[in-house]
Image (cartoon, rainbow, N blue to C red; front, side, top):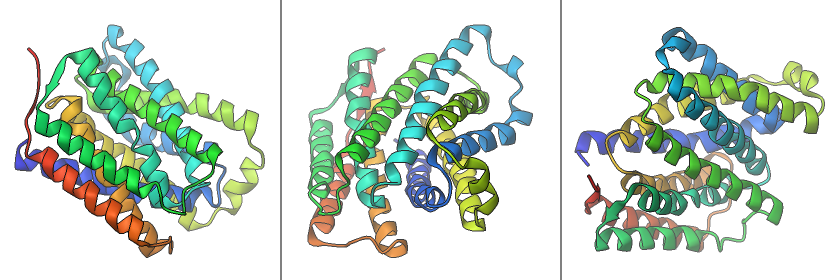
Length: 287
């Protein structure tokens, strides 16, 4: 990976780490499914002038619909609900379980090959994540399952994007978001209440958090990520997302006064070491 592309990936990771904090700030005032729908609507509206529907080939709409279900609806909805029940750092850790799933799917479905050192780096990174899970601040069973479900949806979305090869990434993000809005609103109508009151009473913190989730995480972060997916195999990119719980843990301790302990420090150090090993390896897809 070139230094320029690596820098871009690290920007996306930093934005996503801040997104964890923004989600927790938002769901403290807004119902999580409603906030998810608001986020998707903001993304769609902002990108719509640059992504008219005719820029998407007819054969590619099936992939857009699939992404609206796996990524826009399942990934974000489960993530917002789960993070409302978990600390920022530990919640981000569970979300990163999508990383090994994405790697395995990339190897199985795209015949990607990984060097032995790459497997070592991945194992060390996952060991760091595993150490962090022993923190006493781990969430309950329900929150854990929700976040793991979100991670699985994220992994599936990466595979869809890789296989679909949609040339217009902006149109893909725009329409997968817009198609996800009615899906999430239906879920909010079925499972939540007091949405109108929550919107009227929400402070500027909640609105700013929602805007950050939409414009920062979705528009900037995922645009960078999907652009890199066009250049590198899933197995090369996915491990870098392991840095997200590291940064989220630090931000949680700093901004949200989450607990800081030796287990977190050891886990963070191990994860960073693993990503360093990953960066020194070469991963290729078979041609």
